[in-house]
Every structure is written in C-alpha cells, then in structure tokens.
Image (cartoon, rainbow, N blue to C red; front, side, top):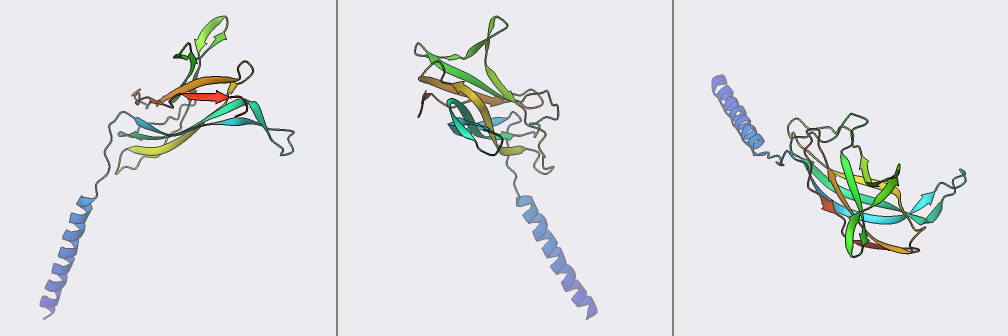
Length: 184
C-alpha cells in the first residue's frame, strides 16, 4: 500500500516537473539586432529658466530655448552605455533653414567655422543575463541652445543617433522641421 502511494506521488511530482519544464521553454525573450536602434517619441521646445536670485525664485528667459528629446532604444547585444567619463554615445545635430534648405548650424571657433554637435554620455546600464539585450527610454535636454538676439523667428531641425561600445551606430531619427518665434 505504501508503495502505491509513493508511486502516485512520484507520478504527480514527475508530471508537475514536466509541466514546469515545458512552460519554462515557452518563455520567449524579445530579440533585437546587435546594432542599436532608436525611435523618437517626443520632442519639445521650452523657454529656458534662469536660476534667479538664489532664494528659490526662477524666471523664464524668453530670449533662449531648451530642446527636450525623448526616445526609445534597443541594443540586441546589450553593450550600449559606457563607464568612460570622456566617451560620448548620444549625438544630436542641429540644423537651420537657410535659403529653403536645412544646413548644419556652425559657429566660429578660433577663426574657423565648426559644425555645432551636441553630444552626451549614458553610463553603463544593467543587462539581464537571461535576456542579454537592452531596451529603454532616454530623456535628453539641450539647455539654451537657441537665442533670439538676432532673429524674431527661425526654422530648425535636429537629427539624433546613439553609438554602442563596439562603435555600432544606430539609425538616425529626425525631429522634423519646427518654426520658432520670439514670445510664442
């Protein structure tokens, strides 16, 4: 009798073990290419704020704008992000409309024109060993990128991309053309 009870219990445990093993095989993780990919979710322009008098009072600076970007990213081999404090991995290019064509914005540096590129650094990100990929959302801000000292309005655009530790560059996303006006 004891033998029959043990045999039934063993069958139950074996059945449960087989079901659990089968179910664990059903768990599927997403797969992504090893090159990073991005998708722009949101882009906005807001007036910059001035820190004020140090007593907590801030004011809007209606002569300058901040650009705010929100984008999703994936990296199939999970190597986006860096612990190198000088290595940049987020790049944003700034364009203005000139004679009906978007051209890179330049600035004179040491007597020569240089293209303005904003770059930033995203630190190391945790990677799940089971998944092996990275997926997330990044917010980035370029403070006081534009001032109205010379023009009352302008037409601008930004392109952005990321680069992983292997040097793989993501696709490039564009904000599209935006017209900005003083006081709006």
